[in-house]
Image (tube, helix red, strand yellow):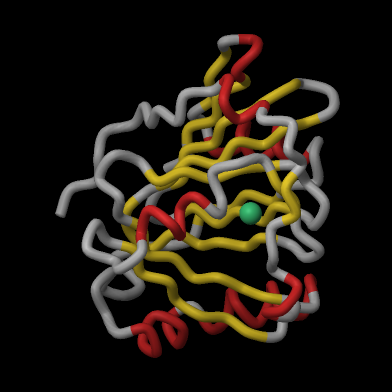
Length: 182
Ligand SMILES: [Fe+2]
């Protein structure tokens, strides 16, 4: 379950309804999907995609996404540091960033116009859709572990455009929730 921190107000939300309402102000969708009761988190990617086919098709129809895949990141992923360095600086994309977390966790920072920087820690069961053009950056939590479904409008569009404001340096990428078990 996600934790949302409005950094400049030192305020944290943990109730999923409050998180959903708060994020909707910025056009960000947040949903909670079933987890282990639907499919084993370690199942092969195709099984994962089939298990969430209904939700994925609904998102595709609503957002124009054409493909979905499963990304798996562990501390042993080759080139992990370089991969993470692409996304831990403030950037935006030409298409939405849509992630459903199957296991592990990570931390999105969203730079909103009205409320400053908002940190959202996402864990298993969290679906987040960050609209195109939203300033944000992403870090993994200390375990360096995340498995997630990604949806794309077109793969070529999902390239980071860096703002080069370096605002990300003012916020420690600290996760607050308990590390997931297993
Ligand atoms: Fe991004």
